[in-house]
Image (tube, rainbow, N blue to C red):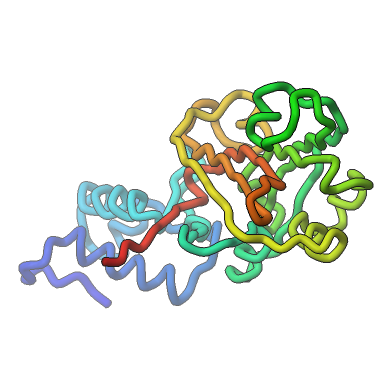
Amino acid sequence: MQIDKMSRIPLYCQLMEILIQDIQKNMKEDDRLPSEREICEMYNVSRATVRQAMQEMERDGYICRSHGKGTFVASQRVNQELLKFYSFTEEMKKLGKIPSSRVLSFEVMGCSKKIADKLSVKDGSMVYKMLRLRLADNKPMMIERTYLPYERFPGLTRELFEKTAMYDIFTQKYGVKFTSAKEKFQSVNTSEEEAKYLQVAKEIPSLKIERYTFESEKVIEYTISIARGDKFEYCITLQK
């Protein structure tokens, strides 16, 4: 495709269409785009036109720019439908990515009143506390802090979670029948510790997700996740 300077369509919009088609047909995640100067020469347009096109493409999630390194094809975002029960592992597989988890810490402890209230158990009850880093194609996507009632899941070990997806453990080892899940979302600034694990800059926007998973009326999982804002988007369909 070529730029039509006689068209009523703004030049930057034409350039965007050309570049997006090239990304979709010929490029993959993390591929480097030509420099602004090279694009100017390729399509005989001004630097201002190229910059406007790039800004719009970055805003729409097609590209990401790194100061001093260049412009790259953005990784595909996880578009999660909120009306359906889902798991991180299954969603990554649907996108053709290889999901994995790193268990950063795992312990059995007496829970605080706050966690007892979240799990609807008695204050001081024994619970599992686990910190995990969730990855797709070895790239950090989110960090999760999970609490599970010991009484419902006796015998859990760190090694088990390092080999098997958590919900597979629930269903295959403990016969869990999921009935529902509830999630709360909040935009937060990434903490220094979270940024280190997620390999992002400190205090960039991330998404905090509080998840309650139910078996009948009982909470069997309480998880607080910090998801990279550049990797996830959530949608919900409203029906009359």
